[in-house]
Image 1 (cartoon, helix red, strand yellow):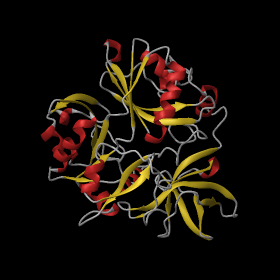
Image 2: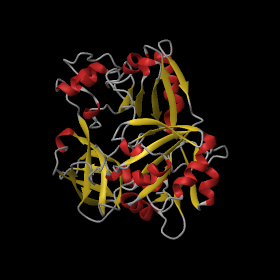
Image 3: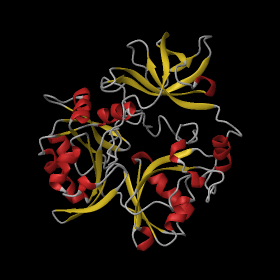
Image 4: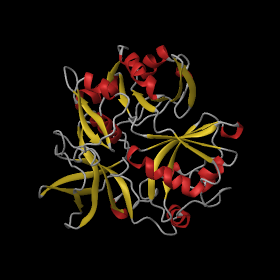
Length: 394
């Protein structure tokens, strides 16, 4: 528990004197943000004032457009004629077949098939002198960079851009607001991107995000971030949104938070991320295997050695929030799983959670008991997402 509501463990850490700040730090403070440590940075968890706060920010993003500062995340570029093949060797994902200005979700794996990090990447015409643009999690970015350099640094040029800012504009009215500043973004569809310029600054925009809503992520130089953010906030649809609502939005969308719902001890199959592994990388595919942990993961996918635990969604049958690290018991009182993320969902208006359970308890409709302060709270395994996604697919 932190700041009066449940937040990811990364947020609830002891403040350090040497916290980093994003290029929007002064703007956050000016806007009345409540700042907390997150991934080594001082970040806004929510904003204070009329119409602000976690729940209000959550609903505003669902109904209009919310501006998130995610500049703590890591940006890097892979270039050179072998970059796509090299990057593909690190993940169970189709990199080489990705079209120009198309984006894909990826998973960096260790040799045991555990997830080092999840990430997004875009093919910015790497085959013709462009690059593969990669966005990784803030708490993992230095480790990711070292891992990538060690594994494929001899095969391509790896250029970190950790000094660039990254903004996310999310919600059904995000396109209305953003196209006033960047005409043409309305032509994008989900998981595509385009270069843009604004006041002389070079931007790259993708139509994607972490809320389940339509929206955009905008990479831009640090020196342009404050002015661009203020220009967005001047639009009538847009309000600033903190990490608290970002967490509740992504949980309603059934999306994983690295460090809570996925980590180096979980495989993509256990995490329910089979959809992220394209057929070309699976058994029988043209480029099957060849990634770290391939034997284990392909055996889990093929059913030769099924995963013993699986990530599931849970809905509480009582109005009792169920947080991370809560044990899950079957009717016999045996522990069969553990919650990894959970809260009282503002849009769903009910307690929801993500958890890992023994595979036999993973089917939808299964009843389990969450043990909250010694009391059994009945829960039902639910399909994900908890709130329908509204991505713009054209």
